[in-house]
Image (cartoon, rainbow, N blue to C red):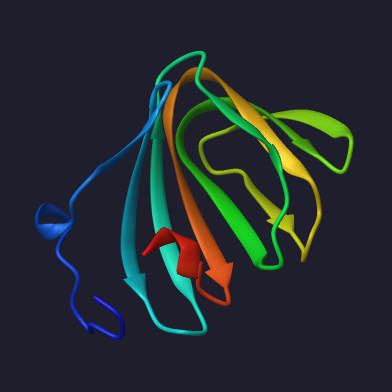
Amino acid sequence: MLDDRWVFYDDVKPEDQGNGVVRRVLAYSKDLMCVENTFEKGAVGALHHHPHTQITYVVSGKFEFEIEGVKKVVKAGDSMLKTDSVEHGCVCLEKGVLLDIFNPMREDFV
């Protein structure tokens, strides 16, 4: 899928991450990656950090996010910026979907 111009959702294999989280790696190049994460209520995105800049857009649901020690509740339409190596994580309060954009791509996802 690297550098594919067209990525059709029905062709993307969902990857069960366990504990109520499913990941779909969508379009990506070496410089940019788009990833959809579906969360069941109560699912946790454990606190972590990585050397990628990440923007998260809340497509649906409600989440409590922690970014650099600050916690806020976000809902559909909200977005967050996480710069290189900033610690972050979330808890899903209402079943939902997050769309993550990474720069550069997450090689560990493919």
